[in-house]
Image 1 (cartoon, one colour):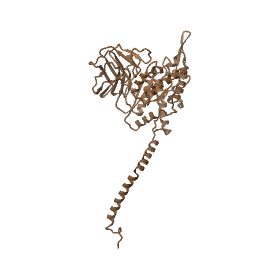
Image 2: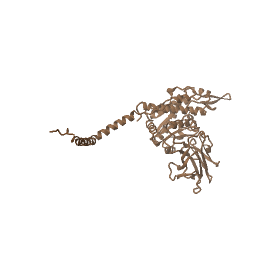
Image 3: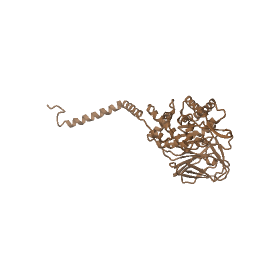
Image 4: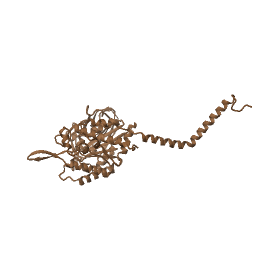
Length: 452
């Protein structure tokens, strides 16, 4: 008798049956063990992601600095890892996520000039994507200096102005810390991105922030959608959104003839291009201090930009007070931070210290310049408050050379004639140093295994 299975006639038939049985067995096992396999696969994916880190090449940036820099001082202090969530969002951009990260750099005249914060903006967008120019304000119309990468003009010459530094404001201020008002019946405003300094900041979306009772301004450019604000987003503030048909470098705004108002107050615009990346809002007002921004109404406005990171560069103006007190200054910083944490609870905060500068005085009817020793005290106070509050801090005072560094900066033509402000090159160097320090912390964050 032939054994079943050894017969040539029976082999193919038995082979099909065995294959079918095997498939059924495998399928059955999949149903039984699937939860364990999926869980195991999840652990593997989690492990792979945890081992995957991002690294920004930063060493070359210090070669652009014309003064000797101590690399160990170019670092962000953040013992509580308060920047972790912000760094996680940068990771998402690195992974190709179609998102926009808002950063606000809030400060005084050092920021209003636009060179310091502008360099940080450019470098971050170079690494993580350019989502647009962000916040711009009508500084020239308020009779003060404007950043060099855009122009806002109007045929109206009778603008009244309000600034964050004023105790008794004739005009309310908006997100940019300023406001302009006219009683003219017909209002016009032209926005122009500077051809050279503003290269790369064409936009196809503009949000105009104005007072509740202000006449809406409508673009003459072809648009795909217009949405005029009807509800107050913050005290005396509404927003009109314009989606443009194409990217543009210019925007002409004319008053809506059907809606004439008696109090035409305007604050500024937010310009974007529809791309993923970093949107860096530079907000600075000449002469401003921590107390000038410590206002619940202002914080409500600032929160409208939904920043993932708030960089605060203040403290210089406080050091020129006759009776500067570290205790009083520290209290002012804490009061400001308390409001930030209340109205922007999801926002990471990083304080920066002021660089050293001079004070002018008169000796025998001759103006002389002496070291402003208070900036060193202010820098120490800012760093201490940041440590106590569990937020990040970058010590610009130390990074630029510390005590007596102002002599070197002035000697190398990096400070202005007033020995308080810096030249364009000086500000751009500081911006490079801030970017370097922030990215150095970003790299260290991943190397320490805290990328998630």
